[in-house]
Image 1 (tube, one colour):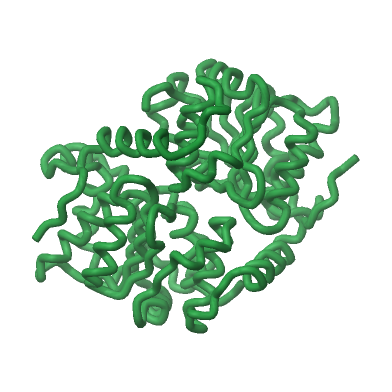
Image 2: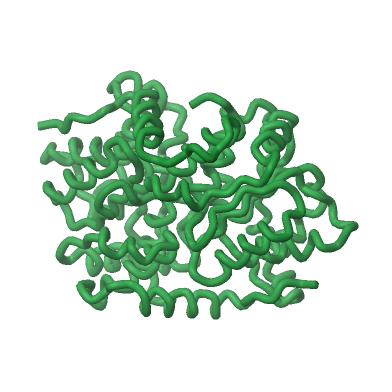
Length: 209
Length: 209
């Protein structure tokens, strides 16, 4: 006998977001931030994520403006760049992930860092005014912070800094929050990842739920 | 001043897995299952994931055999298909995601289901002996279970059933576990997602940590 389940995509989103809003503690988020937090929680399948999400002042507004102005989206991993819903981007923003570039393995050896970190060196021509989305590698976020300590390095508009894991993730996000080179969004601690990062991007790209 | 952090990829993996093995309760997993659970926890950034992971009898062994024999990997979302580390696949397995096929929107309207579910109809020529990886859509997992109720539908070798979220995720995984049409791995409840699904695949594809 066929299974009985909700098969209407719009209804699934509606019910999911209603459940999140009923269960999660979202009071500390502004009207601009709240839909972003809701979608991040949705991607994680976990209302407790709410307590770990931090938006710096102005982040959500600036990210929305940058995206609607066509800012490039710079991603540390293909799971991030492939997850962005193109139909939600009103300005056909370029979505760039340099991790697979054939120069990267040699660059990683040269700078003595991971491929994820080395790949960011190829972001430089696109970095001014960009929306940065780091959803995988703590080393990428640490390397970006080091790049931005150079005043000649172009500044992105905002940084979504949500690497995940057990070595460097919590530390790199704490370092981003402490330095705050530009407005940012983080998930404190070990939690994070490509799905949560993509969810933040998709929420910032369009008000449609 | 540059940040001080671990920049050696192999050392990062080693330290991460050591932390997981020190903190997570992994005793109920077999020697074949344990590295899979460890990598899933790694992707989630959350040792508590361990208590939600279920492997049915024979799953880990059969999945490893299927992958080393070159079984196709069928994915419900591009975040899953893009996440699989090609270098870990010794048999250059085809990795297939049909969600973007131009026939899918019409098929979804015809069957009255989501695009994620309709896309699985295009899996039929590849389904026999395949490794199925559902890391996003509960409707895809429900629809696969309905397809497999037809005895003429080809059988995959194993199913990794880890959709995430608030509507249908827990229910579809419980239905998979109850029906067990082939050996499977699930994350019970709302947790799951593409990163956890990819981690399971990458662990099953190679013993290298």
